[in-house]
Length: 497
Image (cartoon, rainbow, N blue to C red):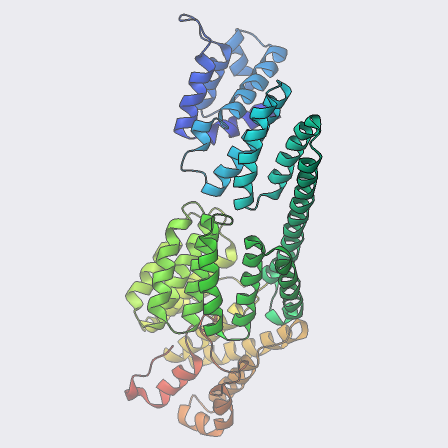
């Protein structure tokens, strides 16, 4: 029974306070010795784990009565919907401030309409003025328009032409601002959707530049905060792609200050900005600042598992790159313990790779191999996690002296890279690494000879070419060049990251 299931889901989403308010609302008109069917049904739905419509009807009516039961379900559903918009419930802390303002203003709009219909037009007009003043501060121009239209009806009765003209101009201005926001949202959503699914930033970079240009134009029309937010968000993406992280940091500071404005503030936006600051600081090697921003972001995502996971990932990277491996390991454990609801298989496998890297650092090479063997191929791998899983497996085999296995896996990796290159442009760094590994295998794992004979390849890997150099936050958690160098100079205790 669809309506009953919907009612059960709705009741399950009520807070304790809302449930108490609902019960008071239902029982308000009951006589002292009489319990209404709505109250009975609510108690059944709130306490029983298994919901069976037939059994519930028998409890309520001592028989099957589908007609009466359907009507009862509908009445209780309407009462729940009525209760959740009570001021006492809307004002609770579990709604963001901006959302509470929207709820409040929309309720006041209905109230002003009711006042107007009751002939209390002066009161309705005063209420509309208050609604307009607050709605403009929060850039809620659809509400501004609705309020002005109610005022327009009242002013029209009074035949005040000058006031009518002002209101008409106000309606047109509010409509233009509303359309400006909608058009900006469309531009922003279109490009962010492409960013989220893109395998590489080259595929959307041109469109990103065009989107920034469009948003700059829209912002110039009315200087609206929300449009500025969209514009800054894309500018940050642009400079991060260009590798100009210092410039991106300047825009991140601006967007953080902008979010503090009531017009666009939300906990999700604040948390997202702090996460972006953390990510940007990792790329700037400002790991302590990255940790600070990630820790601040935590409180803004109490119910968002995905963003909670990002917090732990950024903390992991920050500790890992500082060689604080115990702290990094703690963050992996937190990731593994997260509820698996809404967590993708990709994320779970990526965290296993984090764990494998820690085991490698701890020289538990067999443990590292066991974890890697437990990771299936990652579907739609955008960044090369599958490649680096295989690469870490090879160097772990070499560390254990399992050279025949390493030889076989180098051959398999070479084939894998060839297959991959048919469908996507291959990262040049991986192409060079496989050539070095093939030489290493062919010369019986002689690191010094391989280094000398492949000196030009190592020189390429050590250049500042963005396609060749090792990158932070890449799937190559164990820096191949640093690992190789540590085998040439085992006494130097070189870092592997």
